[in-house]
Image (tube, rainbow, N blue to C red; front, side, top):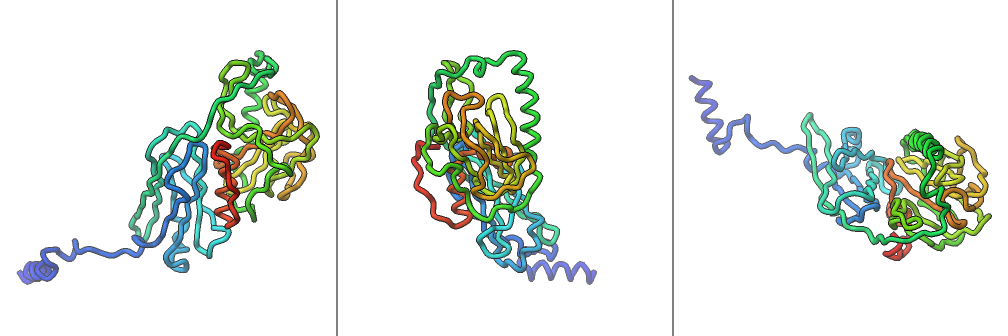
Length: 319
């Protein structure tokens, strides 16, 4: 009887709520401030998420519990290179073929065995991409033979293996530099490619003017994952920079690096050329974030934000 009376008195004192249902305040509910680089992002562009602990010393231990996702994709968090200790960031590449419309970055963490989460809405919009006709390409490079298809299939496996992340750390100390001394864009990222009247693909990189024999340089430090001749890309170099970032350099006439080489920012990789599926010498430059090909120009802007560098004004039609 006394136990029942005690429970009743407790309920009255709590305004009708028993002790077991009284509201609790968890520190984790206000543990982090989350910031997206933009609320609208084009397909083929990159978002920057910054995760700022309200109390760096207190929340740093929870970093391992933080997860960031969009749909079924998990995005790795890294220590911020220019912010105070405890601040983390994630790079979120939006696939070129992503559907337009609302989407969400989902952030989740735990505190005192309780799960907290927060959703950051954003909208995927259509990128400024157009179509272009490319004529004069050897028909064998547009419609490969059976033998060529076998070669392409073998190379696709080699390329996929080269993109596997092996150095999942912050390797870069600065933003990108352009791989040519003088930046002249001849074909932007995202353009739909029509070869000899046949729609084949979209342009997954940025074409920069580089006459035959022009020196080409590494955009950032990293490790060479691939340095060989490929059917479509010709003489090709692929570099892993850490943080899930890869850059590719295609159609070279000469290669000065080998697979496994460690390269520094601005190091000479080779000379430009017209190898692979091309009509003239140039550099085809690609950037990938966790296996998602993104606009090199816009990604360079995101890195400028991350490393607190001046952002170059970009022509909106350049992808």
